[in-house]
Picture (cartoon, rainbow, N blue to C red):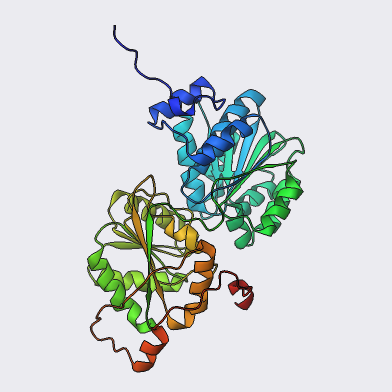
Length: 407
């Protein structure tokens, strides 16, 4: 007797997911839920408010996307997803459209950097799910081109990042326009007190799900530190790019730094592209597509991309500059070692940044290995430099000093 082909995602059985969505998961060859999906989906399908905490790259999009699609089918209403960046909005839209392709799912993406007219046309088609950044969502609310009276399910994705970017006033304005009778889900990689306050304001007895403590890094990412003078960063980067020949993501602190480093890396003969807020939406989309396809081996970005890049196979994440917010270190290095693969993260730390290094170590709860600086042509390390770079800063895991307070 011939055995019938498997048509459902067996690993998702028992979570309360409708057969049509199980078949959609099977077609996408997604057979097993991640920890955040396994815990969040059954609760969210029941219509309860959810506050999910999980490190980046753990499948949060389907953790809220699956129950949202299923509940909207039952409620005959619409869903709203609010997130911090254009890249993340596009990424979430792509994932949900893949999931709902056979179910007739319609979405509308409302983001800045592009004409509002196509977005108004998309809204006129009565989409099931609206995905947008806070600023552009409020633009449409103010222009009366977006109505929210039938919103039944709301998701705040990367909530901590939105607060870091100063979106709290815009989020409040959005919620003032939403129906009181709704389901609210909040997902975040970290859970600072500001997020708790936000949840208590806009959620009804949310169930907290935490699959990894704040500061947890991806399982298979290895980390390495070089303490070096500022003028040694470029030669050291050149040496590292020869050593690591796979897809590489480099983070800088500023837009100017990303542009300047991109020019230097191209002069070294590498294919690279920059990604930051000074680039147009078309340029940013081209950068992401080119990096995913292999057209560009190196992507040089500011922290606008630390949570908006979902690319499997990144070999190296290089922190040319340390992040301004300590928590962003975890999100940056989480761009590698995705989908069960391994990856490596290297950070270049100047002697003056030893306190920042200590704050990162306190966050990830481990002493990061410091490697000896290799020989670099045309770079002279003075005796004073060598003295400042030697030794490890005292551990401050129990210290009350705060990098954010001092800077």
